[in-house]
Image 1 (cartoon, rainbow, N blue to C red):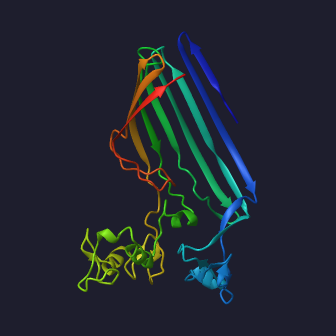
Image 2: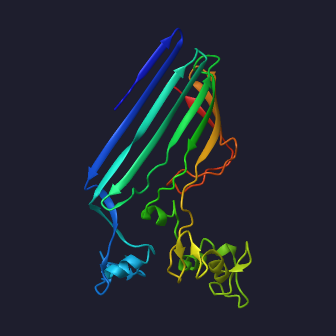
Image 3: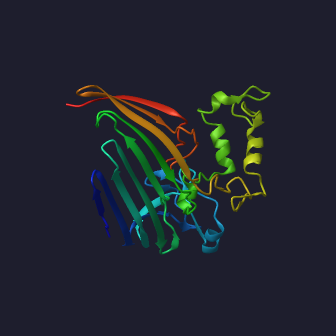
Length: 298
């Protein structure tokens, strides 16, 4: 459903557009964990070696098991047409020309989604988010300055796939911590233990002077409950994050005409130096940063 609105009064022009939608999908393409009978686990899948993963309580009850490859400790997934899903929400956009020099624009979106069979959260569902900008153009369109802001609500409706996704929930096991500290990228930050041999149990992380065992016991101690998961052994997997936090960022941009076909553009982004992450991106936003560019038109 679309509901556009235009209002004109002398030099003021307001344009508003809103969409409301409801979509129901049957047999959508979804990710599913491959499960095998506990006594019939293959040694290979598509010529890649696989090994069983410690069963969850639900898998033990059904006498099934998932598998992992040497490349990824998480369960192997398959894309299949299965189940039902439902999405509904709203999306709005507006542009307001206040005068020949001043204008404002923005947008807002809110989406709800859920798998219906089985009934659970949709994977990678974006949170509510929006944008607002006010622009001043004192010398026509060639010279301008704009103050803008982006905002996003928190996303707490995480699916099981979101929890294990390193870009969202980043669930990890004690054994994953060990594997990380044996990797080549972290090696420059490791001090060899008393025997001087790298890759042994008494190595220390230089930043905290802790051994790998001490880090494991601090981050995922045996017997503790971390974000709803009890750590019972080295294969217990607990999320690092159970939601993506909301945020608001402020930006200042502008452009100046240097010649008829050449302009200089400047942007000071994240002026308030907020630490935030766009949901599902896996990348933390940079702090205050300056962008400079030249635009040539022909």
